[in-house]
Image 1 (cartoon, rainbow over the protein chains, first blue to last red):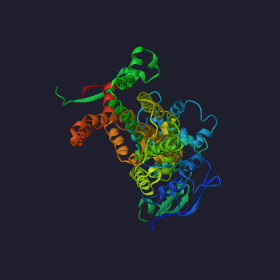
Image 2: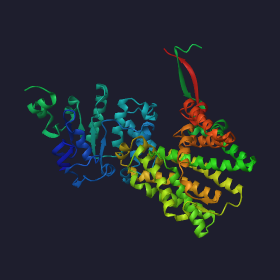
Image 3: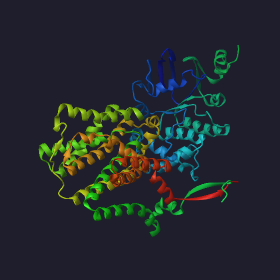
Image 4: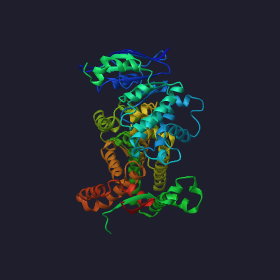
Length: 247
Length: 336
């Protein structure tokens, strides 16, 4: 049973078809990787799933419920969370206060005891989970002074705080060092163990193919290939479109 | 001192670091450290209100009104809403109080609370359709609305038209006036400061920082923006209603630009984002304008000069400068 079912999703910006008739099923508790060259419509695709852009045509079903037409906050409250490619922390707030905001959402309040208790303490726990050293001053620093790697972790922490069932990560690894990526991969693997479903847009193929169950390839707004990471790697069309190898 | 190989370092005073925490109540020193900057202005204003002659007491009243407008402007801007229309909220409050008093003969202690609540509601409803707009687009709408209401009243001649409504019932005496407005101002300031640093208030600040991320955190930002609008506009409506009874008059001048622009100027020189800064700014600008009155028409030049000097010399704002001096130590450290 697919937790996310996308059917014939289409969006044009003027004469350009940003996303053209894309259908995909994401089975529960799997990691779907989305790859493709720049401008191939990957971010537009997740923007439509999460309600930030309304598609021209098509449907997105989450557990059988239609998402198209809902506002982003509703979709988030249903359990589909997304992290942004361009990190969007609340720059004026300390890191741990950034997590208070998702903890105040209707979704978290509806969970058992979610509306009560010391939000600061919960926030610090979540931050520790994504790699903010608890006993250091990092969780208390204003987001504007945190290095890029921590801001990416903060995006992830926001989704964990929301208890999202489907996590959509838009280029989480971009701009991170190999060491930072290797320290974030276990967090994602842990989320999978906990039963979450993850959709990742990624350019770092090596890291992605190691953890992905399925991969789809975008080019010029179309889904040109879908399959296991291994199949994708060996596919000639993908190599041509994405890796730029002459065949 | 040769500063070539040195850099300036700012660190919190130890007492500041301690009094941020639960230990704030552990010693007299720390309690005083926290109370001092809050108590001094409160006592100073109370004493001034007691000893100054009637004319300057009136100045204090109008200063407090502008200070509240400025605090409300800063609150709205902290929630990501750039308002150029404090006059709209102010005017609506003023007219509601005026109408209730003139047509229904209600006393001030009924009209002011009613005008505060319904003025806030009406302003929020008026701006609800444009709450989705951001930055300058929202500002444009708030700028136009008071002008529209002004011309609308002028053209349709409702509520006294051009002449407005005169002969409204005044406050019993100046002392009641002073007590009401000064108390209201301090309550507004401290309540809003407390509110905005609470977990609930945090969401308002997060909308300013990044509305998309707030949406992606499962927050209905439009509901929160409407709440912020209600809080902000109620404060202004209160000021409007208060002034109506103080001047015993309401009319189209309540929608003039002065009530929109002066709060922004006060915020700019006082320090945006602190709520206390705009209040301080209003206490500089309004009395200054009165002092300069004896220069006649040239006072605008001096007034402008002071504004420019303040903004250029202290771009961060007077309040931020003072709070930095109070809370932080500066020292020169050698660069290694």
